[in-house]
View 1 (cartoon, rainbow, N blue to C red):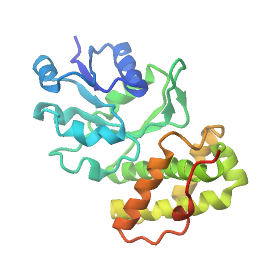
View 2: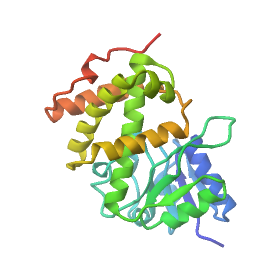
View 3: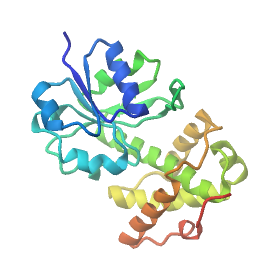
View 4: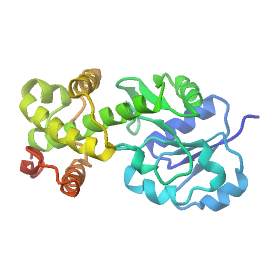
Length: 254
C-alpha cells in the first residue's frame, strides 16, 4: 500500500487534492477544523504528502502546529503566497500555484496549467493528472517565485480593479485597461518590495494576460477583494511606497 496523504482543510480545493490522491491509489486522511493535528500525527507518522489547503488567513496558525516529522513533505497552495510565508520553516516546502477553479457542485475548471516546484512536484503532477488538471513542473526556485508573483498580480489586479469597475477579466482589459494597468503597476511595486526582487514588468504583464485569456469570463471581484485592497494599502504604508491608483479605490460597485 502507498504511504498515506494528509489534507489539512477540506474545502473545495482540498477536496480536489483528496480525490486526486485517492484516484492515484493513496490513502487520504483529512484534517478538519475541529480535529487535532497531534492526534492525527500519531496515526500518520510517515505521510507521502501533507497538503495544507486552508485559506491564506489561516496559513500561519496551521504552520505553527505542523509536526516536525511532516515538514519535509509539506505542500502549500494558498493565494498571495510568497517565500516570507514559509520563511520560518526549517525546510523548503513544495509549492503549487493553483490555476484551476472549483465551485460547489461543479467540476474543476482549468484556466492555465498550475506550476509546481519542490520535492513532491512529480507526486502532485501525478495526482492532478488523474483528474485532467494540467500541471507544469517548474525548473528552479527563482522561476517558481516569478510564477507566484504572476498569480498575485492576477488576483490583486482583477480583484482590486473590480472594486471600481466590476465585470470580468476580459472586459477589464478590453474596456478598462487604464484602470487595470494602474492597479497592476501599484501591485507590482508592492510585490517587488515583499520579495526584495525586481521583475520584468512586460514579461509579468504578458503572463497575467495569458491567464486573463484562459478564462475571460472570470469575474473580477470576489468576496475577498475589499480585504485584499486593505492589505495591499497596509503593505504599501509599511514599505513607504507611493501608490498612484490604489488609494483612490474606495468601495465595491453596486
